[in-house]
Image (cartoon, rainbow, N blue to C red):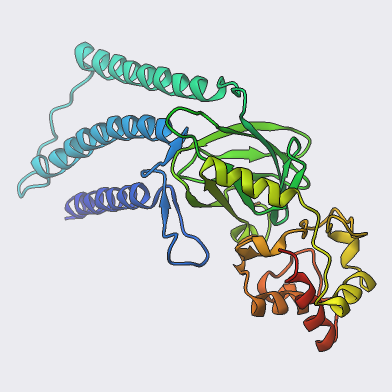
Length: 354
Ligand code: CUA
């Protein structure tokens, strides 16, 4: 009776493992944006750029090979469980004892080695293909710096500094305009991951990593930090905004401008410069030159606040200025204990930063 139960338990375990594997395969590679229905869920199985396309092809091959192995192994296991299950009258006899078979042992040694060898070759080729790509003339160069918990984005050649939204041109039929990224970290390890554009690449303190993306379809691509980096790791979202080439040039020209001089929110501007905001934030064209927090020169150009914590609306902006800890506990910007009047004035000033 005990032996019989054991067989059932094994079967249960096999089914559980199978269900878990299926769950992993289905949920694998999904990024759920923190908000916003329109950008939906993004998946590595619907790539819209190089190198994500190439990575998907390799992934499918690896998944297919592993699925076949899984089906064969699980099939043999289930067959063995059913065919050789406990039957009444088995107690007296011992099953036949088989010791070794050269053919079978050779087969299950050589075959896996061949399979592993094929997978190594295919994966190495994909990795080499991606890593050896050199920037063609005209490629956009950007530096992405991971911070707890936001992304600093610099375009050294264009003289632009922004945050949390990486703008890049789309490659069109006859002009390849990939974007090459230098990845750095200001504090701990982060990982840059926009599933539909490319694989993950880590941002490591004191080390520069390189990656590139070449999207062809304009649109907004959501992504996440993919390396646990502290309490607000989940609210370290990145968006890549892909523009048609001429639109990208227009965006770059706008970003190169210094901040517009406030004519409507003069009180707020005074309050901003009288408080310690300037110690952490830069607003180009003013005396605010802080480097610890995001550059605010064109803050209103961005869709979100706090690296995707909330949408950038006037109400959220006001709440953020009042107490950033409400939206993002543990972020480096403290509650500045501003009065209601100061909050409203500063928020009004920030809204002039278009
Ligand atoms: Cu940055 Cu996780």
